[in-house]
Length: 215
Figure 1 (cartoon, rainbow, N blue to C red):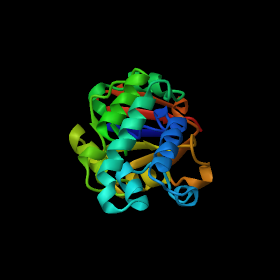
Figure 2 (cartoon, helix red, strand yellow; figure 1 turned 135 degrees about the vertical axis):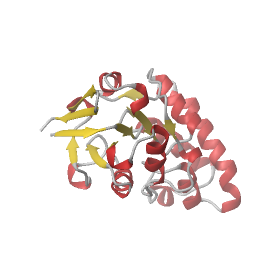
Figure 3 (tube, rainbow, N blue to C red; figure 1 turned 45 degrees about the horizontal axis):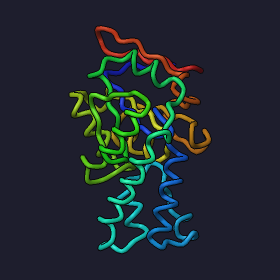
């Protein structure tokens, strides 16, 4: 499939990189430190959601600020050796001008930068949990990404692996490309579904970006 666009918006974890082992390792340790039962912890969705929302689901409001600082510390410390680049990421990002793409993540800015630095990726534009009031599946994060790039939302393509992120992209009026890196294809509602970014190529032209996805 071929898609014409002006800008690309990438989720980070599960799309550009994988830190799933690190995430579960850190959050499991965090849950034990805060006395959260295995049953309560297992009932909460971790992937693709801001830490503030996860902590708020599990703890009284007065404990959330301290708990957020703790999970951020654990995850940043675990980034070294706990992050891997997913297939196709480097080649794709190197084919797109730096001012034509952004990372839009549910992680904090410090954590996202630590994870990207671990795999040698530098994003000129980054939208993190620090920048928004409503996380995915709300469209706010992607709409902010489009504004920072100076591009109409309708001219953006969102790359996501999580249902909440794809819902956010659709709500923002953007074309969506789903990656089956963390969910099965039947769980993902998107304009295009691919295994990972190795199935995507981009060519920059005078008129914008031409994206090609494997059939």
